[in-house]
Image (cartoon, rainbow, N blue to C red):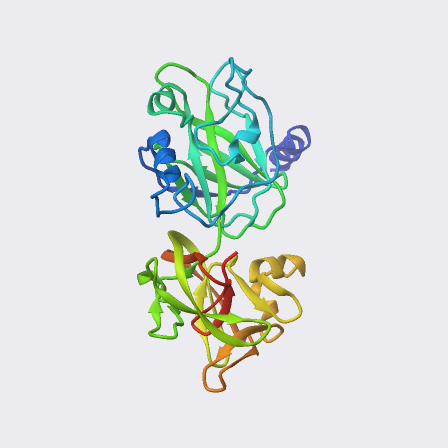
Length: 349
């Protein structure tokens, strides 16, 4: 027995990268075949009235920096740097630089919202043939600030896939290739893009209007909604120009004494003493381990219909809920920015 223990301890000293503790396996969801050139034509059409980016979402934030263990040499005008993973163009890609299938190679990024609500574009998505001919990632080992946190299984599909690293709040995330889907022609392994999905309300949220309140899931271009002039505290009207919807897997259910709403952790509210800020950002700024530290400690701006004025109310409950939620956000209105959702004052931005 002592000999066995000694061997284990010696192994840890000689091979410190060995981690005997098990880590979770996360499975990405989604993916679809897509022609990005056709999508770009549609988005750039002057008569286009859909979502404002190739991603099909107006709620994404890209990393601000990246790094990679290796990079394939440029070929003519095509280059394969790690910055291609956050250039807002799924037709470019980071491609690892090893001569085999790149097992052990990695890229690193600073995801804007930690490990929450991430989307990734697997493979070289310049075209369907490029995607098929090059290899794609089947399994990543994911690290947060050099600490192994999970394995991530990706689907062998174009388009974006989404996953959630279970609220792991680290500065830098590393995605290390463990297993691949082999390309038809080349061993080169590629990732085209990675980003975080941002701010939305659950589909059951009611948006205040001077005429008739509207479910956010039913809002269309041209609908009239109420906006709040923060300086005068007066309600005015504005018309919807653009909205967006997407699937999220983690929401916060927040309550004051009179209001309740379900929203993504990154959706901004007016917080007393902080201005327009999300609960996630506030939590991070204050180094809180969880959202419960903010209960009964912060006040958010709400609209009091009876008094016809805005006021700050304490958050008496913050509950994190997991599932598959259709969420919606207002991207653009013709006047002002500040609107009212389930009584909470929020803003387009």
